[in-house]
Length: 173
Image (cartoon, rainbow, N blue to C red):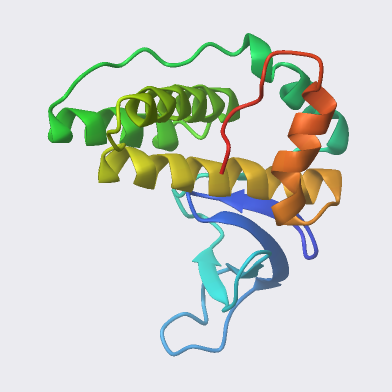
């Protein structure tokens, strides 16, 4: 169970702050425990049952974020060369549902590399690939921002600076 004030990753929605834990004043919900949460990058309030099956975990700490960033050059690009849009969607959806940051970085690197190949032949990435890359970047970079205590828009620059002199980082947004 999470405590008031904790920062957590909530499903594929991103980083949230737990504002309250307990019953909520909504008819029919008074007998159940809820997390009252707000997104760190966004607005609104979410009420999530404490016993939800949705993936939730604490945000990584700064040391883990820096270690993961340092390992980016060693993370292999996911190998997937399917052209069928349904298969592409299923493949990337499975990567996102894994909630594994290394796997998401692998996906970002692969889609970014494919985008570079497409640009060199005057083509474009598919909408599905662009959509999944953006979603993975939002999740990964959002968690990095919180863990490192930097603005979300500074994450890519931070990664590039930390990896300077090494193989390039994940993607150029």
